View 1 (cartoon, rainbow, N blue to C red):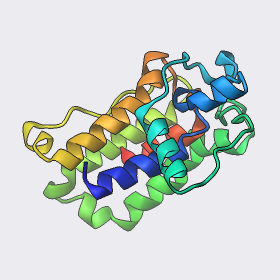
View 2: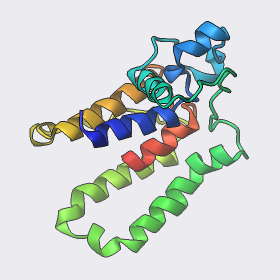
View 3: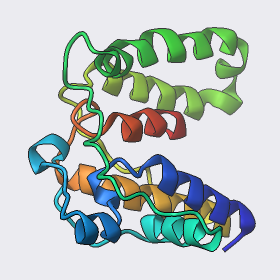
Length: 186
């Protein structure tokens, strides 16, 4: 595993600690705490490699592990909330629109035709965020799969998204942090 991949794995584990899919075992053992499944829609599962890596990194630095339960994840299902506005409107209408406008000349060249098509597909999904189910990243091409770091990163995203894809979560029903980061990865 490369240094960049380890750093990516560690940072990702820290960022996704509030999701039940990555709930470390010390919470379930010490506090008998699991967020209600109705809130997360993710089935309980074994502690992920990302959570174990984050725990090991904290322990290696002599930092104490938290003893309080992790709060339930922030979802984007409540109209009028910041999370709902972000995923149902702001990302598409403001952020991705501005990205297109500021790079319009590049997007409209043959070299960026695929990128533009992918961005438009993502924007269409976000316009229907309440009903569009999350999906995994597109499979890597044979050439892309030869790049070990890229293949590892693709697998990490697959593993992180899998509980929400399998549960049939949408852009709004999956934890906000997962969907927000996934937008920028896509």
